[in-house]
Image 1 (cartoon, rainbow, N blue to C red):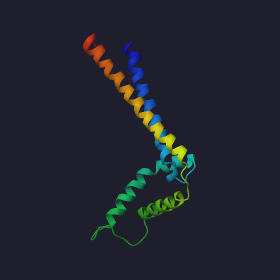
Image 2: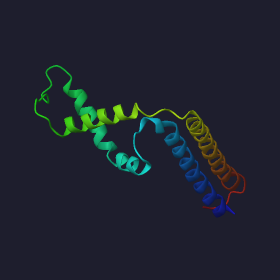
Image 3: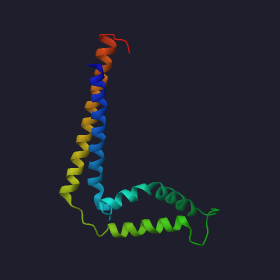
Image 4: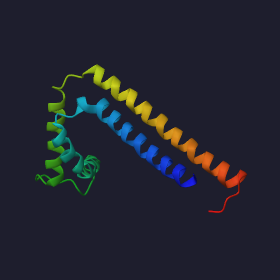
Length: 134
């Protein structure tokens, strides 16, 4: 019984995370001018985009030693982000899809909370009340 409960807790947690991730994607879909396939490619580059943004902001400070005039990788990535942002402005928000995303995000959190309650019940019932080893 304890093994089944442990597996159920993990499976419910993963399911809740997947539901929340889908809900977040649906809510923010308007901001991405990509097809779903191109979106995954964009996600793989997200750490590079984040680092470029951080380096780009640092350049704006007076006296920064990174201030250079020639285009480099950071400048190219920042320009690519600006271009994507301009394309995303053309997307019209589909409110029903965004609202379903909000609902899925909430449901995902509820599923994760239920999984947490199952995990706590495992600790209370099997650990404290029945005092089973392991």
